[in-house]
Image 1 (spheres, rainbow, N blue to C red):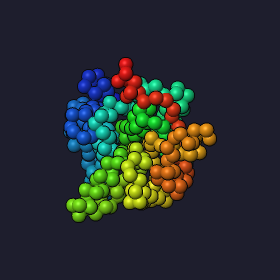
Image 2: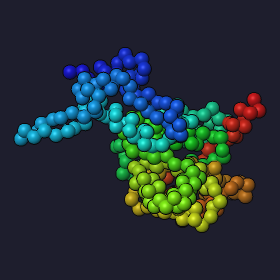
Image 3: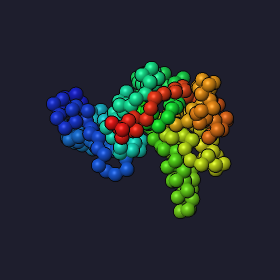
Image 4: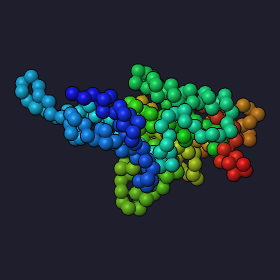
Length: 280
């Protein structure tokens, strides 16, 4: 019988991974099963096989040859990674930005270590809170982490831009769709990335949505990765606190307190690489 390794070796389409990533399908990046997996000799491409127990009863089981690859592809596609980041497959695959090498290196190390030790250290593993100005690769770093977690370890992850989440909720209200249909999957995801926390009008309604999301994940010990252009007050030198927009002012002290327990805070310094590209 062929092994998964034998199926993957020599495949020029997927370079032995069993899947290919595309950004051609619209809003989200998509992983597609390669032909070397879809032609699996064990399940004939179905992803499942019938087995028989000691009593002679037959039952359906995930294919041991290609089943895990199919699960990883589903996890990646369900993560709702924006199509712009389809090429980001590692947590150290950062944009070429002009950030402080020390802060960037520390952030990359924490993200890579998070992925590598996720399974063994899950109960005590914190998420991470990436803070700093725009154009420093924060979103790319967080997406690299969940791309690895889905495609290497088949972990259930979901990405959401907080500003777009609010827009989706407003649309749901206007269409009579229950709020829980939008926010429920985010609360229940094993790993959630909240991008652009603090963006918006910072209204009471917006803070209530964020409080609900963070509090329910906090109470169920779910892991959360956060990016924000604002900076938690304790992460800044005192001389800079009057010059930088503070995250507490945007989301409230209660949410910050819980985030600090849920996440490792990381402050990235530097200049916006997007502006550098315009001026170069």
